Amino acid sequence: MDFEDILYRCTLELGGAEKYISQLLKKLLEFEYFHRIHFKEQALLELEQHNKTTIGTISPQTLKSFPFSKGVMLCGEPGCGKSKLALTVSKFSGFEYSATNCISFFKSDLGASERAMFDSFHTDNKSIKILIIENIDILFGNGKATTNRMSSVSNYLVRSNRLDTVINISISTAKQREQVFEIMTKSLPINKEIHSDLIKNVVFQAHGFSASDLQNLCLQAFFEFNKRLNGDDSNKTRPNHLEIEDFLKALTTVKPSTLGEYTTKIPKVFFSDIYGLNTAINDLMSSVVRPLKNIDKYENIGIEPPRGILIHGPPGVGKSMLSYAITNELKINSIFVDSTDLRSMVVGQSEKAIQRLFEKARSTSPCLLVFDHFEMLARCRNHYSTSEGGSNRIVTSLLTVTDKVDDIDPALIRPGRIDVAIKLDLPDKISRISILEGVLKKIPNQISKQYLEAVAEKTQGWNGSELFNICQLAAMVSLRNDPDLSKI
Image 1: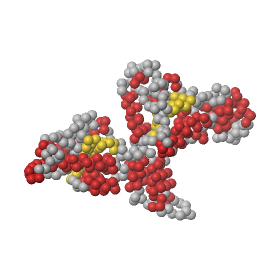
Image 2: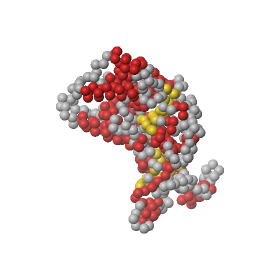
Image 3: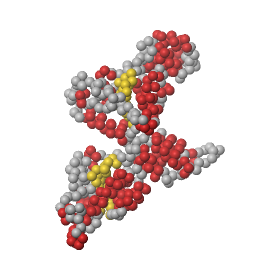
Image 4: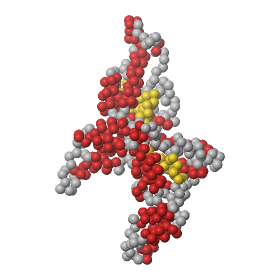
């Protein structure tokens, strides 16, 4: 088996997986060698007697007494390319191979399931046979196998002399996605002059996309191209190629499938839609937005973006609005969580929920995790207790929004964990005027500047939500008094 040649041919079909292909090929070389030792004993003995064949100081006959690996476990998120990787490497390896899904082993007749499994594993031992088993967690819940639920696979299967090698497949970097996307778009009608720029622009916005997500993105982009091709506007020139706009439109509907249950509908709020919080916005721009948008520049001078940010202040001052705005400004994946949903009275369940949440965020990085009511997860130790002592155990690194900062464990609010703390106070008079003016921009009105100043004077101690509400109530009262009114 020519390692370099097979590696090259596999990488032409599989982008972003060179490391995993190499690991799998090395394992196949190991299988091939031990197969010769165990099942071609006579030939090796003759060779040993003729040429004194040894591996270092260990002869093949001695190696025969050692047990050897029976297979490899490929695991990873759905759509990352486990089956494709196994099939491609097997195809180019030159060995006989077959693929089956564990569902096919389930039969209604007594003993038929066992017979089906026996037939799949049966071999004459004259040559290596690769057996690819998909969704092995169905058979061996808590050859070569694939699964997207590694935690459900029994430890009796994943151990020495069985499936002792586990390869975790992940398409997590922009370079990997770029290689995958380049291979997928080769067959699409894209102008060669813009092909390279198109790939970079799309991949830059496709954070956390798996191989299947990128495939779906290409399909949706082709549908957008087809809409333009069959458009009713006869004055426009008929398009011949897919454009960047087709992919950008597709990106509005195609999202990372790994987020799944954590997908949240985020209001379209930007910093320009938030009034009276200029200082907080500037702090967020300098500590979050600019470092993430220009991460290479910051790394070159040895600066790392903050690991966590705490936004705290009284209710209604705009903490959640700022979180929405950060997500929309950065255009990255985001998960919004109410901390109360993660708490459980069952011992260990809260930690598992948090661990799973962070695993999802890492698999779709860069990802913004926003925790509302953070004090419910990380209260000061021994300050609040449940039957499970949950608050003393659930202390981890989180990105947070809270109005009870004094209840949070001080061990979290330090460099390396939550690096930046931004406090939002109740708006002063100038901020209240700014908020009122901002809200009234969307409401036709004839209110003078002097009147707004008088309102701001009388609303001392009000938060942003209350100021927004008073504008809405004023519009409703005016419309109730005069249904034909066009301005308040």
